[in-house]
Structures are given as structure tokens and as C-alpha cells.
Length: 122
Image 1 (tube, rainbow, N blue to C red):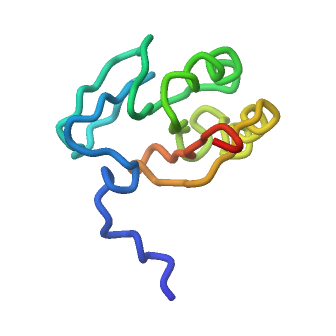
Image 2 (cartoon, rainbow, N blue to C red):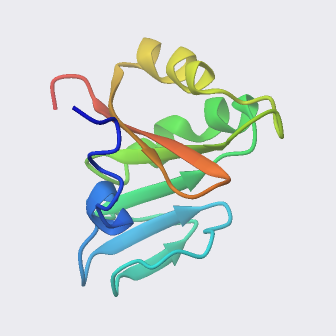
């Protein structure tokens, strides 16, 4: 079985986004072909989905509880490579002790990868 089985799956489907959803965006949303959603920058109220483009571990530590409360599940994206020093395991190191579990990984584009989290047991 090929590791590329999801290669041709549209990004929106990988992210769980659909037309008409209210999607919170934290950080700079890179260009991508996404459905016609109501994208809300720096949301303060409930959303159907949350896309968080994080720059460093301190940002994640300071915002995760507030942002996680805005959507049933949320994505945290980090820059690939050594651009910020933030790595996949850093996200887990912050989120897992707070009662979150990661259950999906995605490559957003050539620059960003992401992990999807939700509260354990939710």
C-alpha cells in the first residue's frame, strides 16, 4: 500500500472543512483552495473549526486553553524544517498534559504541517 493514498485528497476534506462553516483563523492563513467558509480572524466566539498557524511554543502555551474552547477540535500548524524550531513533538508536549489528544496529521502546503487535537474523551 502506498504512503501517497491521500495525495489527491483535497485539502479542505483533509481538514474537515465544508461550505458555510465558521472557521477561526489564528496567525496568517496561507493561500489554499478552501471551501466558501466564514473565516474569522482571531476568533472570540464559537467556531465550527479552528486553524492555528503557530510560530513558537510559548504562543501555544499561552493560548491553547482559550483557543481550544472555541471549537470541538482544532488544528495547530507549525512551519516545516528549522524555520522556527517548533516541531510536531513540541505541540504534543504542550497539549497532551492538558487533556488533549492528537488524532490526525496533515501537510497544509510546502511550508506548514498540522496536528488536529480534541479534548480526551470528547
